[in-house]
Image 1 (cartoon, rainbow over the protein chains, first blue to last red):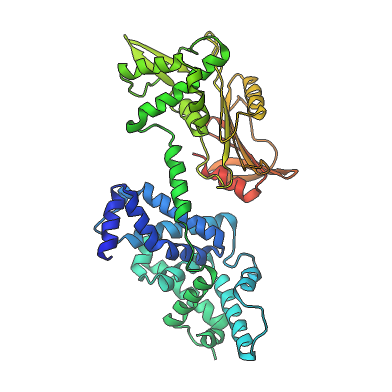
Image 2 (image 1 turned 90 degrees about the horizontal axis):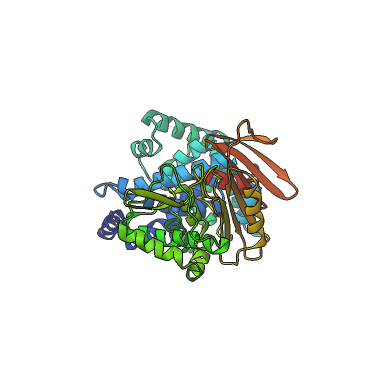
Length: 187
Length: 280
């Protein structure tokens, strides 16, 4: 946490809106993208992230300014996204087969052959991640998108370290079994 | 040949997906600011630093009720009202406010439904002087709730409140109001219907400027033997509830503690459930 963020966190803790503004500036994009990776819906992701900032502001009294802001805040984001996902049964890509978001994400215009092949690989890989159970997907997002270590993830999700390791292993295993080759090509 | 995706592969994949899905220009700060302002405005119970503001607004309700009824201050004895710790000075001011009804019409129009619920759910409006406690607006017989989530486009708000009728007391007065529009015939109709029930109730309506998108919340004390209407059973934050679709409207009915709550909207099932789950 740099000096700017530390000062913002302290101001935020005191209920100063300026602190909230700085923290929003620093974390909003990552928060929306994190929620998006879990929910698969842009609008919902924005809602989740906005709610997370509001919830964080309401719970600012629980924030320990001596500890990093990010794990505390992203716990709220992730829990909000998981809650919405459970409630609405939305899948990662918007529909059960995931085709709508894929159509948005992948340029449908004709291109060179290898580009078309690459798009197919992308589509397959996205579908593989979409097929993961939401809890496994969440662990994957925390570990590989937010770069958190397993113990931090366990703390955020309030589950045993072994559970986090198992979910990560299961997620990777599923990806490998279904799309190992595609992943290699994509990478 | 399959290979185990390494950490870099997965990191790259997720980053790529996130970047494709959400552009870096995304900006939710204005949404957060607006919602924060709304939440601050709709706190259920007045904070110490703005007690007087709350009292003044509440007094506007009292005053306008008295003004409409032509009976002077709407006073009803209450069994055990809490009085927000009012000082004699504040009580005096409250009395003054209540006496000048017309002057506070604009204040009433500026109020949001949540302020009505403060009056009802709060603890009544009252004053304490010379060992006497008087409540000028009767409290609801249940804990009034308001939606924590309201779709941003529903900027026009109306409310109606009818206190419970208490036998032997001076008839209690109802309150109607709005924000952004004049009090409508719809609010008057809601008041009329609520008045038909001895228990009274609270009606909140949130609508888009064109009026074609709306959300209504109706809260009434649970009658003896009352149960949920027919519908698909759903769980709303641990409360028993049912959901049904009628024409283009979704209706969620739930029972929470001693209150029967109905959420009605034409925004669809997911929004209806989201609103119902946000009631607090």
